[in-house]
Length: 152
Image (cartoon, rainbow, N blue to C red; front, side):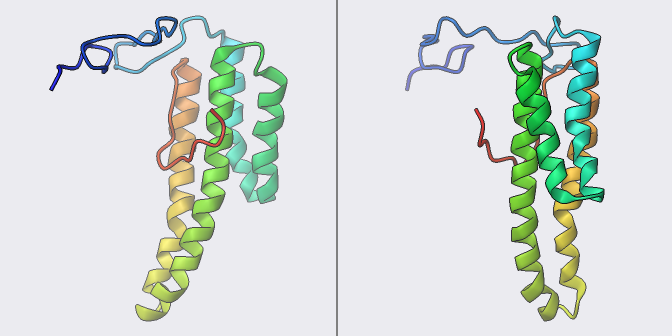
């Protein structure tokens, strides 16, 4: 077996010479040193759009789509955060349906206790939204857990 290089490829051969990884801050997180304060705030609001689920669920998906479409060409930072927020919103909707369907039979088998698993996507959404918002405000890149990558 050939040893892996620093780039994770066999023999350390870099097949994509144009790829440049972002710098890493003191906490070990990738960040964009060129992200302005306005870009960081805009990215923060793209993630906070998840709060629109409290009003009408479909708005929570539409808000980051519109925000991302408007600004994706202006900044790679906003493009990345916009794609991540949209992917998470769609994934969260799918996970909500899956957990709701699973909660019914499990809830009946456990005399109602299993209905609690229907709350898992909401907790995941809340925690993920807070972490992503903090990362965006710091100028860091963020990847939500359990997210299906629809937009690359």
